[in-house]
Length: 462
Image (cartoon, rainbow, N blue to C red; front, side):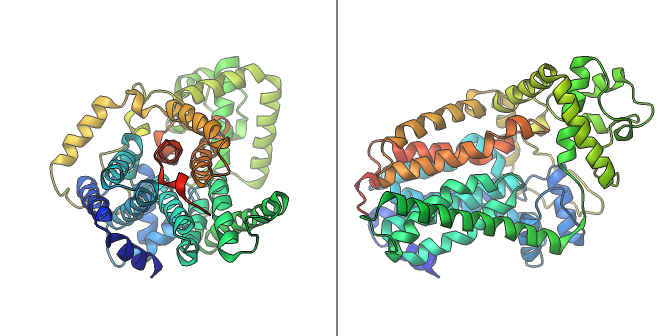
């Protein structure tokens, strides 16, 4: 395989040995630390789907399809945990080998990016968010390596991971747009379809065309798996709408959740007590509750149309209350996590679901010590998404002025991808979970490393 030959070539120079060994040690440490992987409610349900084949579209089925393939080989959540970390650390090592020339800076990159606290905490969970981080990191590593080393097979090897990343979460398609553009530039140059001296307009049109093809292919890939595998279909967008309607009701002091979307005994006061800007989940848990549209309580097509109409009407009638609700949610999503319920930050205690077998025993006690340390520090700035968003914005401004260089384009790609993933969440999130920002954390640090002085990418001639 191209990637195996590449790593064999890379390990020959002595200066490459230390970062490769560091990456392997980090991989072993990560798997042992988290083994067999953190199972939250969502991931326990996903594990049950893998075991039973009863797939739901409550989350994208792309990760579940991959998990279904590896499950017979290793019937444990640890299988996907290990697969995620293999892709994650391989991508980081590949980037380190291209970003820096000397051993110690390479090792510093591997450890600094790989163990970045918020991303590393998310990677310990069996979540599609972790799968996205792993796929995007490896795809970017392969793309940059193919560009620097001018190896078309390595560049082509990145494509499946780009397609997977775009389909693994409902909102991840936008995150692959910048990476697809970087990949397209490398493809055109390697095939000499448009040499460097071609008009900028022609190059731009060709890159844009390839990006559209890649995005459409990723979307089609996800939809095809969805049509093939899903047996229980729900409308997840209804959760967002119901969350907004409850937020408007609580602030406007009037019930705007339509009658068919709530149990008959639900009053405005009960709704206000259940409403939380942290997450929509409490709305659905009381005896008198808002209907969720999932878990056997699916809305009909007519009810979904009426629900969309109720949302439009409520937003038009109470725009300030809607804005206040969304600002509150966004502030909590991108702010500090000290006050959040623990499950919205991380979930180190395995959750049982249906007939799932008990999880494998942890490999060592360091895992529980690590979890306590995360609990003690979760309100720190290093876990604050807004901080990374500000850094990513600064990277974009700096890299834009250097966009003609490979270092500038890689920085634009990485930081831009992370921001594109999270910016829509201000109006689309139905919960304020740290994991939603997972790739943005890693992408920001990679973009910053690419743009800093001393990056080996600055000396690459294309």
